[in-house]
Image (tube, protein in one colour):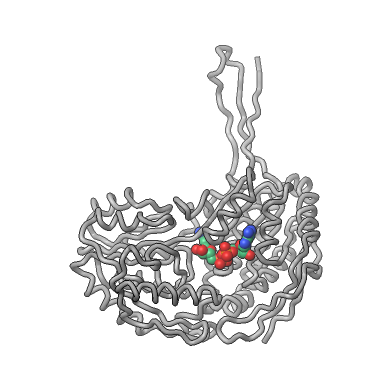
Amino acid sequence: MAVATSYGAFIAGEWVQGEGGAEIEVRAPYDNSLVGTVTPASEAQVDAAVAAAKAAFPAWRKTPLRTRVEICRRAFDLCMERNEEIAEVIAREVGKTIREAREEMEEYTVDHFRRASEDVLRYYGNVLPSTQESTGTKRIMVVQEPIGVVAAVSPWNFPVDIAGIPLVYGLALGCTTVWKPSEYAPICANMFVQLLHDAGFPPGTVNLVHGRGEIGSQLVKHPDVGSVVFTGSVETGEKVARDAGLKNRVLELGGNGPQIVFADADIDKAADAAIMGCFYLAGQCCTAAERILVHASVKDRFVEALTSRTRDLKVGDPTLEETDMGPVRTPAVLARTKAHIADAVEKGARVVLGGGNDGQLHEPTIVDGVTSDMRIAQEETFGPVAPIMSFESADDAIRIANETHFGLTASVFTNDLRLAWKMAEALEHGTVHINETTNYWDQMAPFGGAKKSGAGRELAGYILDAMSETKQITWEIG
Ligand code: NAD
């Protein structure tokens, strides 16, 4: 069943056809069936979307906070009502399992409305004394003002949740928004924008343009955009950083997360965590366990535990309840996964399980004997592979874990408190989990990467800083 849509853009509260060339056909990665089509926006339509957002900003920022929060709460209710139909489309167009798609909607996306409507009520400035002069008659106020137009450019792996962060927080704060979703997941984006509109966000506050990289680039460069929130690969993120210039921005980029398993760890728990880390969403998470570092003395035991669990995974049609792992989304992900495995084998690694594919369905794969000179150890694979590396000492593990230019999420399995503390401090990653999978994130905590994995933080209230101006107002009261 195709979702009938050929919309291209949502500008100033109206759906319009995109005028930027040939339709983008969205085909399900599992069976190549047509999910729907969208038309890319033209350059003039990107300008029109930004102009609509700019025009809507003065009235929206002055709309009482209470009204903005009430609309957020209505959107929360609507999202609860429409979760399942959006999740079904995500499962088809992205290929994540229906259980993973529901999690994206029910656990993460819906929560943005709840959190944003609470966080903006507690996002305020300060009154400070001055030490500049001896009069004691100066007072300094610091206020947080919405920045204006927020541009959100998002990837396909969490197509609604990830864009939902800047959109929902931005709107709650009084900003207006323009969203360029991934060309690989545009249909669920249309459904989410319709939901925001139906909840009552006024025309012009929410705008959408479809298209590929060049449309994203034009949006990011636009002089009337105040803040850019980009999530995607390091390669694109570096271009976006250059294009955004001096604009406020958050960059949430790729990862190459190590899961480190020490000799004293609970091996069963560590193996469960690796299943989640390597095979959740077929490995296509920025926080995936891209390298499993295991102490040499327990490596064989760990590989055995991981192998028996991996054999139990049901791989197939993502729309079926019983499926544990679906296909990889794009031909590029499939090609890179295969190239990384081939390179590892050529340099001396051994495929313990899997390695093959049937179209976009790639087997969950375990590769043992991985070393630092292999591409699979240095680059983000973003596919369903567990590369096993071994180490002899904590310092050895730290060196390997920190040797790539990524720094998003790391996890450490040990029951030794001192060792865990030492590792948490030594790992150059935005998040370090102790005895938890790399694929864990929490709506209550700041999320973001060190090194090339990004700049800035989102989740919790942290993203509000990227979408506001901190303004100083000085009072002479003498
Ligand atoms: P991508 O970088 O290919 O594309 C992301 C978005 O950027 C898409 O909408 C794309 O159309 C757009 N784009 C492409 N070129 C552009 C340009 N020059 N200017 C502006 N926009 C441009 O990434 P992807 O394949 O969609 O997603 C996978 C990547 O995203 C992985 O590297 C993954 O680790 C990363 N990711 C990071 C996080 C995080 O929070 N850190 C979360 C999810 C995914």
